[in-house]
Length: 77
Image 1 (cartoon, rainbow, N blue to C red):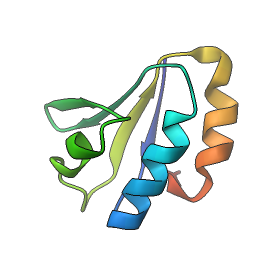
Image 2 (image 1 turned 120 degrees about the horizontal axis):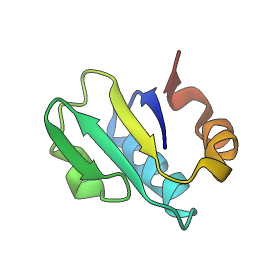
Image 3 (image 1 turned 180 degrees about the vertical axis):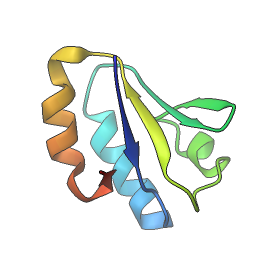
C-alpha cells in the first residue's frame, strides 16, 4: 500500500478526482483525521474537511505510478 497527500479543495476537483479514481479496479481510501472513507464515494468525500490536504491510500502497488501520474495536480509534495 502507498500513501500520498492530495488536495481536493473545490467541488469540481472532487468530481474530477472521483471520475479518475473510478477508472481503476483497485481499492482506494481517503483519510482525514480519524475518518477513513472510500475514495470512489463522492458523498463520502464531501463529508471530509476539504480545506486541508487528505491522505490517499492506494492498495494496489502495481498501479501506484500510473495513479500518481493521472492525478497530477491533485498530488501534494
